[in-house]
Length: 246
Figure (spheres, rainbow, N blue to C red):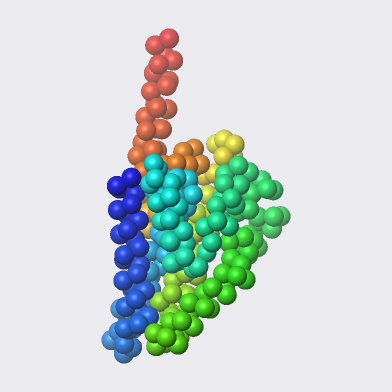
């Protein structure tokens, strides 16, 4: 629990720092533009992290023995990220695990497997009109009561959130679940993208490079997926030896 809560807190604090500084205190100049670009890239990654923390909360993996805290962390992360509803996403995500890669899977394409068609399906699944209303209310609150500038809200909140959507879809859904010439290993219908551990972390908090491991062990949190693979590989390598001894 300590690791999960600590990492979640670190992601939230880092995200909030950039969010607050960027929206309320950022002063634009020629010299500040490159720094802003770097901050937006980092904030995009942290926004992906907020969603991944919420995702792990849906599996009870952030605070396993404290369900109220676990749910609160997940709901808070989704609210910060893009005013998403934890209660609405929770059953959809569990349905994804139950019907992975089939017609009942809300994350799977509904006949149009192209990158664009699948992305639009993914976007419609996770984003609603009420969410847009909530974002608008927050943005108006920022501008009217806290004197924030609209361009800062767009650059330091909207752009990273949209970038994270693309990151989550491409590395966390499309690449791991699209059909290839190589058949799926099992009924989980998920591939682990062949990238280095560092690139796996940077692309989608290990949900690209270790996606199959996640489906094999949904309650393993994102930071534990590399160790889960090592354990599975060790078990697989030991099995033939045991059979040889027999």
